[in-house]
Image (tube, rainbow, N blue to C red; front, top):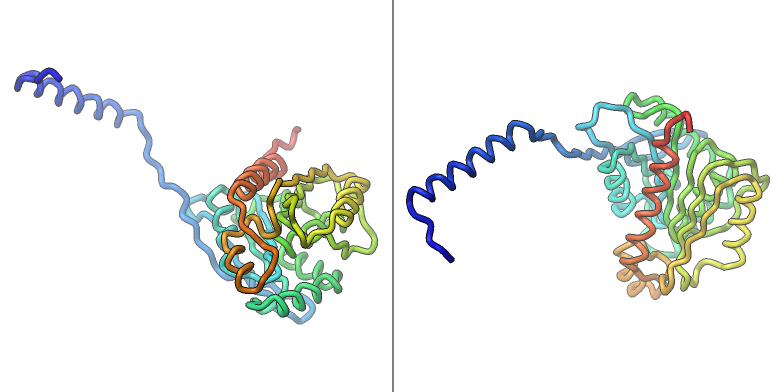
Length: 279
């Protein structure tokens, strides 16, 4: 490597400094997202629910809202972390509380009991979701017009039934969701429905999944079912392996399926919530 003499070194340093000054003349420095989460209470039927609201407080513009419905464990840290991710990407994210009073389960027996109680009483579940949506729409940082819902496992089943009930959402996105039909009288739905499922999911019946997808399609939804080869139930949750070992459940995290399904969901949310009204 050739040596650089003293005078040449000074010239080189000066050129670098001038280059940096030139860069500073046109480069803009802005603050990135600052996500803040807080408890979001709403009530209906004499019962109080404690959701988790996440938003970017550095953004002064009203943004579209996304409801996030938790797994059968309840509104825990995993659901909140997903809400934080959505907030960082430009959405107002409300992780709802389907069990009331922020209840969570730590054992599958309790989780099963909680989730079955909700799905066996869809009118009450719907009323709680409508209460959350109504209060959220009144917030000044929420953009009027559009809203979407996404859910995991039990929550995936909830958002599929939201679409099946014709609730006012523009997209319903399910990750390894239970396709149990809780809605007795399906209603028209012209939004996007994405169902992300593990091809090796032992907890989702193929026939039930196909029936749910067909019913939604018959009601006018744009339905897309994505099967991930080798993926099991809970493939999007990094904690799934721990739960599988502790409770001997057929769960497993799959990084590839997690990444692919998340990217597809973001594309769908952008298309449903950020499209021009003229389209």
